[in-house]
Image (tube, rainbow over all chains, first blue to last red; front, side, top):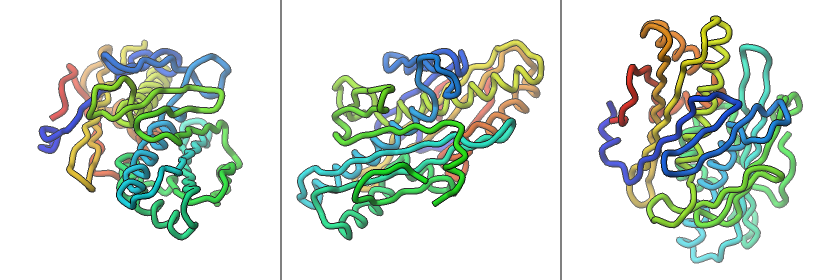
Length: 143
Length: 143
């Protein structure tokens, strides 16, 4: 397959054999109860897990950028995910909002652009028209 | 922005303000401790969270396909994620392995293709050359 798998700095695996109402787990790692987002059973879901993955990846990248620019850490990332569609054709919308409180807005926009390009999860989503990233002064509901 | 946000069946939000060594959370939902995959601090990371999101999404889709085809539930999904690269340019590789024990291999391949197309997280990753999906008779390390 892709020879780059052999150059991995880190590898992990997530497993689900139970479906949406069940559990997903990483061997020797995180184990989460899952449930449909459309009922009120306790549990997380693909939407929440994706929002946590992307927000952490973008925030980690912003932290690195802050360090490289010798800025103190003032960034925050909020990722909203919406589940849309109808039977047999569903989609997710993903919008990341990035706020960097400690710098002027132009600098925050340049840091956002750099984080969007460097964050590994962001790169994976970059080909989708359903993925957007914005720099914000205040967080708000995506619309 | 995109008017489809207003038609959402479900919306959620993941927040990270602390970085890679900290926490990420969904308000009123999952809260996880995070840490770098390259140290041994306790915590999950973007790689694990993405693997759990995608494996749950694919498995939920396979469950629906099994139901539509009046098959009993025998599918399992394992998603491997590798972190590759070097300073200032890192990437993730993502490979999903799908096993459907209860059907012949040709049927399993057709169910895999359908799940890859219908699963919302899979759709988001479809534009990336780093994302692959395979049907397997037995799970193995991606390579």
